[in-house]
Image (cartoon, rainbow, N blue to C red; front, side, top):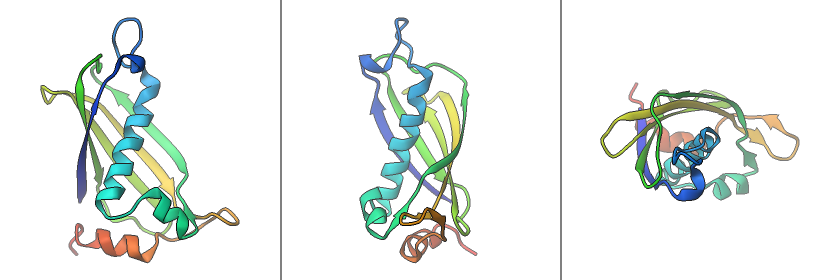
Length: 137
């Protein structure tokens, strides 16, 4: 299993009139966690795109348990629970507040696709090699 943590301070523009984070922003929190997770493996989306690969989101699920509020420092815990097979990768996210209370859980599924032609493809070998150490056989 591969897990990373990323912190985000909730600024005023992310909240509604009640000081609660608007639900639509959680997809961005997942993306920030996912981007940083990939970066900790030594890649950026820009690097992956330079390989001719894109990673569109094809499915997203989110469950809201408690609200995040203005000025909270949240932690986005991003996990790959299994080594991706073929063209699909699923990032599981858990969002916690400073009291370590679970606020939200979500799963985002992406496909590896060849940018030129929009055809599904297997995960790049260099990406797989970086991940394999986290998933002992």
